[in-house]
Amino acid sequence: MSEEHNHRHHFFGHHKNEEATPPPPTAGHAYPSNMAQSAYGTTVTQTTDHAVKTGTEEGHHKKQEKAHKHKEHIGEALGAAAGAYALYEHFEAKKDSEHAGGHKTKEKIAAAVAVGAGGYAIHEHHQKKKQEEPEGHKKHHHLF
Image 1: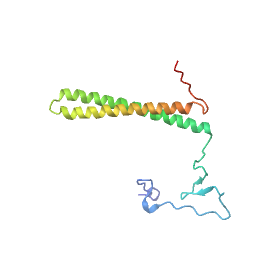
Image 2: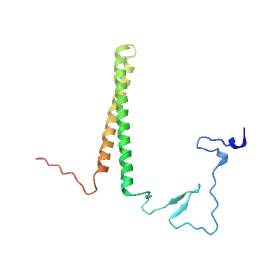
Image 3: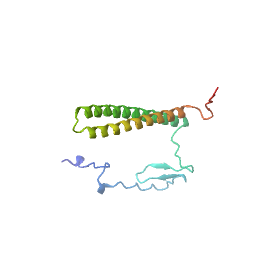
Image 4: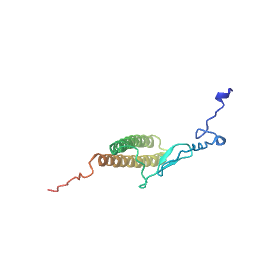
């Protein structure tokens, strides 16, 4: 094994004996009072409201909207998969009479998972819609 390929990656990317040490501070360099240096040499901004501002508000809202959309799609896919598995177990319960009880139990569990995933998808859809509407905008519900 050559010397340049002697570096081994493990579970978190480095061997426990090869722990990263923070770089020594340079002479005459001081960090501002709201900045701190982490153990790996990156700079972390500390704010008083415990939220790190990493961009514009619009960019933040777009990221959240995209995340809610992604989670909504995951919920839809999980609901479809669980529903398909419930149908499969229903068919297996009819086909395999010896183990029908076990298949019926699995069918009911899969149906419950499908309903829960559908509820999660609806929840994320509403969260996404909440992100899209402006701050001061309220929906007016008219009864008549």
